[in-house]
Length: 484
Length: 102
Image 1 (cartoon, each protein chain N blue to C red):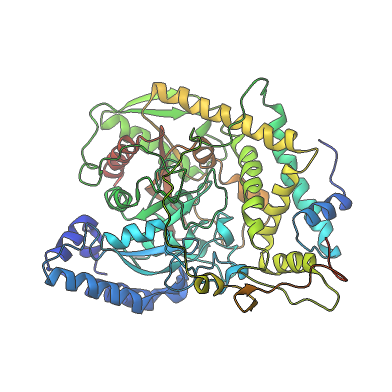
Image 2 (image 1 turned 90 degrees about the vertical axis):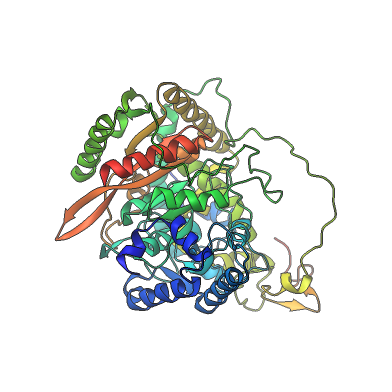
């Protein structure tokens, strides 16, 4: 895509498509050309839907010609994380278990985006079943960071983040269970937004941690993310956990500054674990907030550190239950049995062959913390701490409108550089509590770290109280402008 | 609670998880899970007396929808992903008799 087109707001591009000034088809072709040029070194996609995207684009253009309005996302070219089901192509979750799975239905978000005129260019790579922070746990290869292809794109939605950062699409969808949208957005230098739990239907999102999972957009700007989000939001009869909370479309208003913004700075976020460039970006953003007239408020989140422990009980517990459905019977990988092996062996061999090491690790961990004798000590206790973490945020949001902090303590790390699972888990320190509390969070680019001649993006995260996406996104747009 | 995981523990968890774990993997898995559980042990230091467990961020209870019949997905579509099908049924190894049982 040309630079000027890339910098134009998506709403304007879609308006041009609706007005017949530019065709959806030409936009798809431009992205396909860029993908052909650079995808071999990035590996953002598990599967390209070139022909389907062309057909969808032609349908949008035909509607425009016929005088019909294709919708607010007319001709918007989107990439979809490969754990969100679509009838088109395969939905693999980057797992051998689902290597050939074809969904008999579309996720609710896919139906909504299609009805709004969006075009789907392909399915993006992820850590297997969304478990990981680097997209290295994919059964189909690592996604590389477009800013430095020797480094990870983050995860688990690494493919969706890299696709936006590399200029392969206008926006993309990811899912966020403990930071899987915000962290890869930070590492790839784009916007990644996890809405409040319950804002967006999870129907058709392959379940990982059902009380934590939420779908959200990646985009070039906060305004573009808001435009996609406006389409995703709403109560869904197919997902009883979608909330009945009014939503006013935000995209048109997201650039309106907030007159009186109180920005909370938790002292726990100024951790010595932050890389120097991350700490510096944080200080610059605080200074920028003061300069645009925000009030800086000290808040306390002393349970920040305990979030990882809480999360790595709750998320594996829910995962061990959710992933019990992969038994080699109704769908997914089925092992070949030796003579004399029984149904029980079919389950355990199929699962051992189909799941990669990290997924197996989390199933084992989740099974352990839910098992008799350990349930109270681990699982119940983690749920009690979850209440305390929620309370801590509630108290902080009495004093401030948004909480500002780093998204990740470090920029993109080298592929293969994080040897042990626990050190990878610790990178989620600033993002897991958002999901534990069910509040919304957004990561925006806040500068770069110079590393070995490359510029590695640094992300900052804003969080707000539940269902206050308006304040969150308007504040994020203010920071985006101030830090540009 | 704080006692170390044994190989027997790992084998039991693997069985409960329906994951066949080769003997060669038991040791490495024990080391990894022990390291993660060591970190998770921090939870024990948080005072939680009298705190309600929070299983879910939203307080939604028993939301009922109208009881309206809808078309079901065609059986053919649902069977398309099955690894083994006989007629319109999922085929599984023999469950009863020799070789059956859990």
